[in-house]
Figure (cartoon, rainbow, N blue to C red):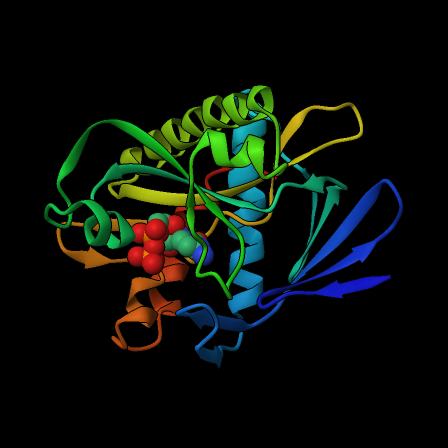
Length: 229
Ligand code: CDP
């Protein structure tokens, strides 16, 4: 059984899944779309290595095995339809909603929930919305906040060691067969803002029509190759 999203296909093997990373890149709720050769390979390897790193730091992730060139074998999760954003610096939709300047440090790491729904343009949600609308319960929501911060802080430290600033990132969580909150989906320059004194290493290159982003994605991949698989 296969289901297909904008950038990945999911093959259901029962208690496990195989995620196929496609070469597609999209922005603006799917309004902008292109196919970039090798993107699936680059993003699946980066995701594999970063999830391996997080597993070793005690963060539960779906990751089981990298299947080159563009697949990941993973635990099957019951996904929660939320985009969980962790921010260290102000950018993007944070500035559109709350003001401030790009790159300004937040006084503390911030976790935001948005409902994964392109038609509604991923509305921001409070824990109360999650409970009342039956998306998830308070206990799981609070656990997600804790795990997202922990994962974000470990990733920030990793990139800092390699000379890059991690400004923000998006995670998706699910529940595994033991009831454990577990990190799923993808962690790549498609889902993070990575900067080095004004230089962009993430999907903002594509969002802002600044050329083919894969050259910079490869730099990120090279850093991640310090994490063994
Ligand atoms: O990208 P935009 O300014 O619309 O959204 P944001 O809320 O500022 O995005 C915060 C972080 O989450 C960025 O690193 C985005 O790349 C990532 N994100 C994502 O991966 N997928 C989304 N649907 C929305 C945000």
